[in-house]
Image (cartoon, rainbow, N blue to C red; front, side):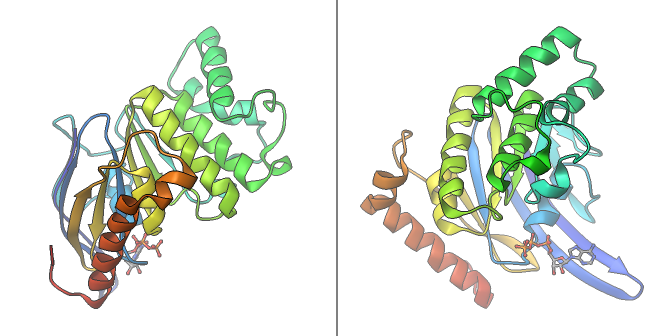
Length: 260
Ligand SMILES: Nc1ncnc2c1ncn2[C@@H]1O[C@H](COP(=O)(O)OP(=O)(O)OP(=O)(O)O)[C@@H](O)[C@H]1O
């Protein structure tokens, strides 16, 4: 289980202080898919950086399966928004996916199997020899997802991973994330500012207030597990859920108190 408790982050530079996160508390059960949604600048990236051990919180704690996070936790992989910057341009697709496995000291035969399986899973069979810059944006983001999946993480953090791709590719990648989550039984924390995306993908949605950030509201997405872009988004239940999230985000922007 991922436990975020009383998390606070203040950035200080010189005599200027920015309180990005004020007091964040929520949990993600093992195997769950939770979407975090909040207004621009509310500290979503700051939160993911604290969870992945890349940033030290000012207060509060992050625990994974009861262990306090003090650096990058084993068994956690992150997919960032900017695939262009997260892939190595000098390495082939295959090498990009394989590199973290070498660092993890996975034996060669197993590495080959994991890279092959991950590229197949994201629909990139046979592209191993290409370089990232020879691929479209959507394909590059698939490589970044393959790299995270090949690592066999217990927890997958995704920081607005589809913000830079076109709408059709985005829909395909959303379905890819749901199918990988169902197949691999991985715990997913998915950050987005897109309300429809949060409701379509998540089993739970956690809404954040504007900065300094607290949890504004939380809901369980009681839509069927089998979702598809056409029917799920037209389901009256989906529309009701997205309306509730939208209203909370509007309140969050105004800095209003929690309304349930
Ligand atoms: N290194 C830093 N130094 C000072 N302030 C920072 C730093 N990084 C972020 N901030 C501030 O912390 C707040 C939260 O930023 P963060 O990038 O975490 O938000 P976000 O929700 O991910 O934003 P967006 O939705 O626009 O991507 C903002 O006010 C930002 O200006």
